[in-house]
Length: 195
Image (cartoon, rainbow, N blue to C red; front, side, top):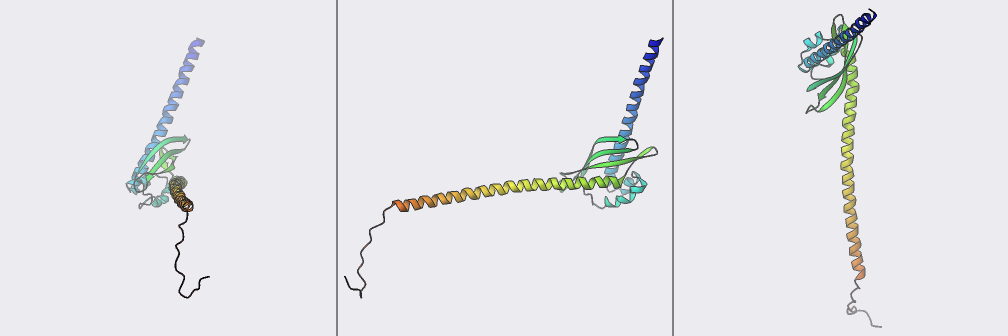
């Protein structure tokens, strides 16, 4: 009888862990879907749909995402972290002329009753730091490439200067090794007396 109780308790424990995993998975999946719908609406400039996916308190910040101010070409969502009534979805916005400049940010969602909603204010706060990081990365790449180009130009100039100096030294050496030509005698000037 005791063995049956332990076995029943074990099955109950496994069932509760699996059920908790399913609920957590469902929560994270719902949060990701809301984040995906939100960013797709922003990229499509469908601010009405985006507004329906945001918290009431942060809806006013949508104006900063409209009218091409984000200028993203596409987005990707990644790792998600759910902590009670708050979720964060790792998001990459691809901006720039070719859509190749990645701006990392966190899409912050709040659980309101039975639905997840995007907190635009907190999301934009993470976007600012992500954009600054992307700009700094681009500047670092630019400076690195610029320094490589500058280093190559300096190396080329030094090599050219070295070659010119060597040619000058060779020419000077050749002139010093050649005996001077015997001076030709010229007649004294007409008013000069011979000594």
